[in-house]
Length: 87
Image (cartoon, rainbow, N blue to C red):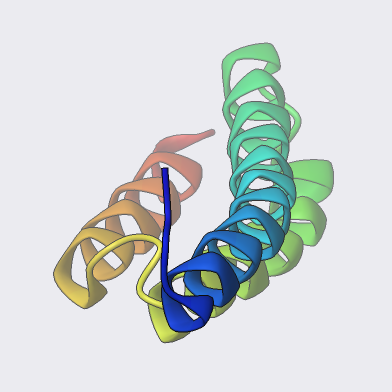
């Protein structure tokens, strides 16, 4: 258990950040799932439209160090490449 006031504050801050990070990670996961589902269904136009939201979620997650910058870049690249393959 935290004894000093600074340690107690650190616990409060960590709780707040956890909620924020979980919300952002959930948004990211949902955006990625939506794009992948549209790719599998072969709906290129809709997938390209939802790709914008996925890119935004990836960039925000990388900016706040929720995921690494390279991971975000790799995921964006793979999504774009998968959409390009749709006939």
